[in-house]
Image 1: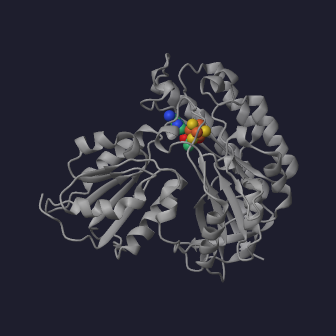
Image 2: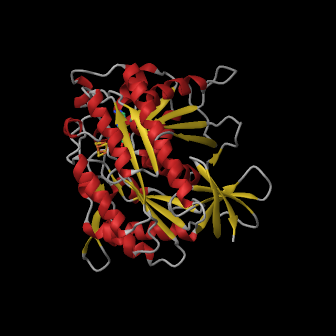
Image 3: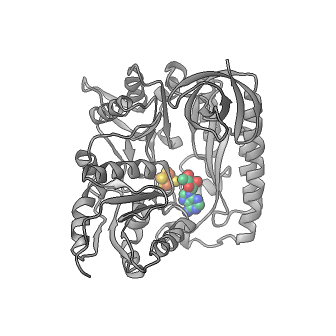
Length: 439
Ligand code: 5AD
Ligand code: SF4
């Protein structure tokens, strides 16, 4: 391959979780610092980064079809980099299967993209799936992302090894970023206009560190420190694991006004045998007790969860326990998935894999129950007056989309700007959004 000219424009497509969105933003800032600019919508980019997700089957398949579609009408292809968790897990396979891919870069190595681009331009095909903990954060350029609601990765990786999950293999061991770095990055985001920060981690509530006085603190301590920033109005965090929950974090929900009344706490199943086979290390009962403690600390807290149906060996009766869990908790929001065997995970080779039709039927029943509950959660908010953070314009002139403290989408008309906190009354509810008016 002959040497390529210097790429001037880039496009980053992020799939999957919020941490990938965050990584995509940081890659954009990195490429921007190299003098490249984002390709305008609809125009070809010189460099395309596919920031991939490996959590379920279809996501990986989508990457291969996306690579195919990047070839232009004249037969040429942009410089293609595959990043993210598929890159980490299947780097060699991607290189072998897709000759157009010039770079494969894992989630802990993307700070080295500029050097990789140089090599790729010279005709090399470059793979970097090293996992040096925290190394990228020391090298990436300072935050410039402007948005009212920003993500901040505080913790990465997972030591839990749930038997269905690839994350411990693709994101590596649990690590916490240092307190001082996080305070600095949060301040940069706030200076650039962020009014809300969502702290991210695969096990965000496992975050620990030392504050500026050298005292050991947990996520609650970090939240309290960030809450002291005057221009930061809202704090959220996701995703938590039931086993890392501390009394202090629960208490913070009742004490820190800027900590929003919302908790995403995956449960996966409502049946103890399945939970054990999943290596979840909590029971249905301990999960319910935990949620009760959050509700005691903050009675209006919105609870959200993740569910998997059709884990190997799951019987009809065991699935019914998941429906019972939904009835007990009454989730405000939830994500539910059909079990997808991930190569290299223990569950992939377990006996009694569940037929697709059975999974389809279970997912449908589960989603109907979850939809019923998110609608009733929204309906119960009607009549409430609350603040919304304005995130974007609506389709109609003068229409805006704001987020309530409970992370509901609320549409309203009136004078506003992106980033404003507007007091509204909630008027009418659907399963996915509410109508509101300015008060
Ligand atoms: N199959 C289906 N869903 C999965 N998840 C993780 N791994 C799998 C898998 N192999 C779901 C879990 C997790 C969420 C991020 O994705 O519910 O909480
Ligand atoms: Fe995966 Fe379990 Fe870790 Fe969550 S806690 S990232 S589901 S292994």
